[in-house]
Amino acid sequence: MHLIRDVLDKQLVDRQDCNMGRASGLIVHLGESTQPRLTHVVIGGPALWMRIHPSLGKLSTKLARLWGPKRKEPVKIPWSRVKTVGKDLKLDVDAKESGALDWELWIARHIIERIPGGGSEEEE
Amino acid sequence: MKKILQLTLGIVTSVGGFLEIGSVTTAAQAGARFGYQLLWVILLGTVCLIFLIEMAGRLAAVSKHTIVDAMRERFGFPFFFFVLIGMVIVAFLVLVAELGGIAFALQILTGIRFPWWALPVSLLVWLLMWKGTFSLIENGASLLGLVTISFVVAAFKLGPDWSSVGASLVPTLPDSDKANYGFIAVSILGASISPYLMYFYSSGAIEDKWDRSYIPMNRIIAGSGMTFGGFLSMAVLVAAALALRPKGLQVDTFPQAALLMTTALPRWGFYLFALSMLFACFGAALEISLAIAYFFAQGFGWNWSEDLQPSQDARFAFVYTIIILLAAVPLMLRVDPIKVTMVSMALTSATLPLAIVPFLFLMNDPLYLGKHRNGWISNTVVAIVILLSFVLAVISIPLQIIGG
Image (cartoon, rainbow over all chains, first blue to last red; front, top):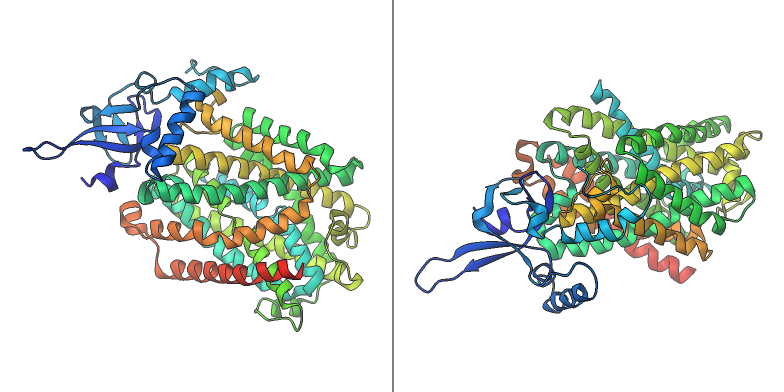
């Protein structure tokens, strides 16, 4: 497996095949005497914008404090939860519980559901 | 049977996407100013678009990726974001032009000035996306867009000299006003080769759950749909050459453009022109708004489908809601839709390499397409047309600005 080609920027889907963003960053543990080990996949947030420029990463953190869902930590999915690596990365998680859909739910509840005909995100 | 029905996907993208305010305005200006002489540019743009649309459908059918999915994966976020900014700015300007086309059509039908129509029109486009499904948009727009066949009737009724029409399919340069000729040629290419059409088409193929068995059907759809669109565009140019050029008219306003239809069809021409613009621009406005929302949603990995309730793909619905409402603002401030059209078409041409070059890399990547990747013919045709359109844009846009 080639981490940049096969994992980074791949579509992430949960147990129910719900889209939960793309792999914005990877966390690798570098031990002194062990081989580097991939530990987490990071979704969205500063990790994504820092790939363009570090200042954009800082700006996104500041903006997120002013507006939107309040979340202190970036969304990190342990690598052990990755079921398959193919067209998508299939994860053994629930998208809503993981925090990856915080923005989706926030926009649904604060904006979309208030417009007639918007429906409710809790309906399946 | 289902596959035959999906021919409508090709027809809607050609009617709603090919014949819209951009192609009508640029073809009408070309005919009014240079007669048949720029017909070859429409032919070139159409051939290039046939190849590009076929590629977009093949990528989706084989790899199950839309163009945007594959672009983000293959080239990474920083490059994707750069393309996103460029494409969204250009597509937004084209959306303003299309909404302007609908508003102008309503102005000539009702007498009420176009800025008053901007907000109601954008709300109507939004409402269709909010409540409608993908197949409603696809089939509804294609059926209504069939009224644009009246341009072909007008062109035939004006009795063109077919040998001159045929001779104009070979490129020639005018004796004077070369900068204007180049600028109109660039704008025609921009109006024909619209990247948003590719994004819309590949997303549509995923919405319709295409697989490899659709590859032959995709070829027919791309070939027939885009040929139909190109044929309509040529009819506009021919009608303008016969109706407007002898009177020395330029297409600076919509009522002037309507003359290309009223000369041939005095009784119904005015209404047919207005309805053609109304429906073609309406189809295009829906496609562009969807294409922009698809671009964001697929690039960032959000939920997206025109068939889901808005709350089920809230970020996707939020993007098209904001984009459509923002696009009404310049029109309410009385920005001239014909000027926006010409600028946006030339800008589309200038930014084509940004959209097409990475796409060509994807279409040659065995990881995505395996044995179905591009052959040398499609690569060469598309590369030459894109290079030509870019070079023409770089030369003629500054000349046009200097010359006013």
